[in-house]
Image 1 (cartoon, rainbow, N blue to C red):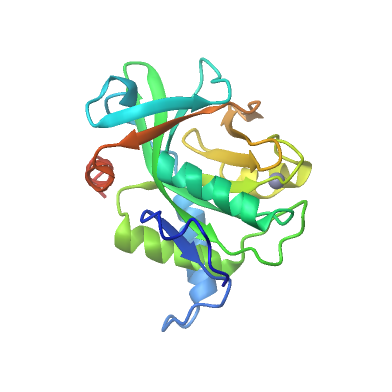
Image 2: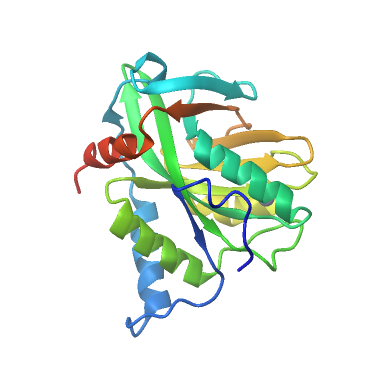
Length: 234
Ligand SMILES: [Zn+2]
């Protein structure tokens, strides 16, 4: 595990080593995989929640990239945004990646995600053109998610494309994107060379073209996480 410059400043991003996790579970990979499959195969209903744009508590909401209309909107915390950008630049030309945790919401007819936190994976041996999350990473995500962020959802993966844009590759489509294909799922890609970020989501089995995100700062980020967790009782 290498030290990360952005890590100290980002209390809400957990960094996970590739090293196998010690566990008393006799079949940690298998059971983790089963739980992951169950988690990802469930379609979630959006919970009623005020759009951040209209809400007290949020400040400095900006956009990065052009926002696609008539589809899911994504509000990404400044902490997570900074972490992904810093980590992507530091590791380039290797890819980095992880999983976003957040809440799936609706305000009138507008569906949106608020993403206050993420679990980063040390992909030290990733090739420049693809990523694969090892089983022990998913096990750690399960542990962090259930112990620290119950009520949030695994929104989808993020990863970097050092120098080749924000469109998912063919490999991305057939691997990681297929695992996150429900209406509340996204895949976020950042290119540290062009400093571009974009997310894709599925619409009736069709992968939408990448859209930009809203980046927010919140006056009390820990309180926001608590509210978002409580909004979806298990
Ligand atoms: Zn990719």
